[in-house]
Image (cartoon, rainbow, N blue to C red):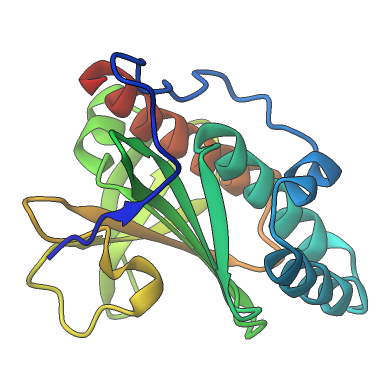
Length: 206
């Protein structure tokens, strides 16, 4: 069941803010400036830990994904400790969660967004699924040798974590895209395009 959270009142007749239909994100300092003190501290500590790793790729990828989703869903963001971030858009006098970013510093990063897998396959952005090991959820990125692991989620998915639970139910579906923390630019580019596809669906509904 999707739970809607109250946001500051919206003036009667005011249009719902449409997502930015562009791939150019806000910069990281601007994203941080929009957060509350506790949420900002959680993210800063997380990034500091990532920056202490032998290569800068993890911190670079994490900051980029934060700003991509923060740009497309500018209503508000909140953290679940240092491991996950939720992103919202306005929904009348409430707000609706549309993205989540999970990074447990275990070598992988997971992005959650509306289920646009079929649209991505139809558009040729992804191809598959392909079997990798014993799993059949790997999708090749157009024009690249790289792939994304994509899992489809819905209200029947077992034990959804609190930071993405509200993205399921009420006929809502989501996908979880999992990449290495040190993923290639092709992989991060593809995730950005999937997020933009999701944002266009909100704009059309608005």
